[in-house]
Image (tube, rainbow, N blue to C red; front, side):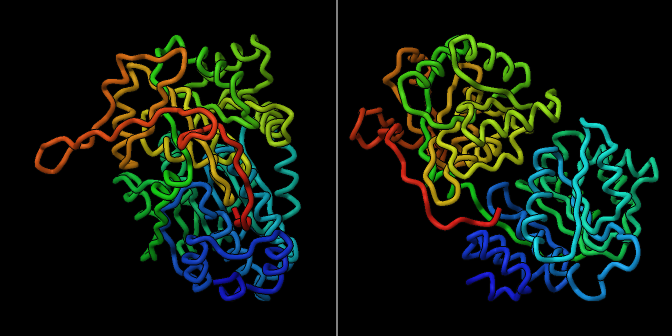
Length: 426
């Protein structure tokens, strides 16, 4: 199927062609026809599946109809709420790109910066608003924003909203929206609290589910290093020194941990930067921009801050700390292996992270290949690798852990990869 077969207007098709987007991703193929019919949508999909275009394109098409032509000052017709500044910025850029040949205006608002420029943009009149919850409510309370004309509402990354404590803010926003509207709800996971929240937002929605876990696990080469907590930084430096790693996204579980990793890497001469919630918006944007442009090869991030990082040719993801939520592992390794390219994900595991590894391997239904040949190996942990259990209580015979065989071997994680393939709308 092509984008033209989805019934899109010429203005949007022209932009997609210019961007080199050939075929819709699965979530776009399923969602766009539903949304063009005006139905509510409950989508289960993670970042990187193309869901931004899946909701942005139909909204732009709806708002491009003649009866939506602005008379007088523009009023907010579409509201997209998302948890982080980076993701809000990315979504705003997508609307700008896809709506290039429409007469629609959008802006992005988020906290951590002065509000003056954002308020000025709002006063000029906009059609589409992308916002983080805190700044949105602040400006509503200041009478700078009215939601009474909103016809299209999107709640994106709902699971992260809950993790970040935005549930009460979201409920306040929902209470201010018109009852007659089209609502879209996206989340990477659907645990009971997420389902309960979706019922407050949606009427009788269509449901679209994209299962990225196995696809991600298959196209990303994963490797595991057992190491003591104190030797993690030494192992990371060892890998950076011994192997050619063009661009590396390192995940830390905490903000303090991210800062410490950067400090130790800088001490050893590696150019790098950290991105997390305690950094100012200017610092976060600068770090991300220098990383995307290749001015630095190493970016250290927390899970929340990494939402919205969209880099097609990211060479490596390093799980310096294993996540305590197994789904986060899938999100992390999904940052590489995008846009048709292969990717590599490296994970460090210390004694305290053994339960996290067990949960991760259960989720992806496979054992991550263990690398034995490194100078900081923790032999005590190697002998405790996870073994999935059979239904009758018997344990499966463990698969032999693959070893690094150097150049030319089957598990040569450092061989150069070819990138390419058709681009997909983000």
